[in-house]
Image (cartoon, rainbow, N blue to C red; front, side, top):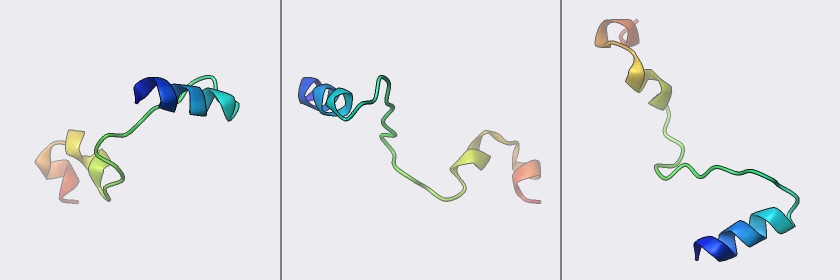
Length: 40
C-alpha cells in the first residue's frame, strides 16, 4: 500500500509529501505548550 500511495503522490507532481496519522485536530499545536500558557 505504501508503494502505491508513493507512486500516486509522485505522479501527481509532488516530490515530497507528509501524512498526518492523527488527522486534523483543532488546538493540536497547543499540545507542546505548558498548561499555563495554553489556558490563556
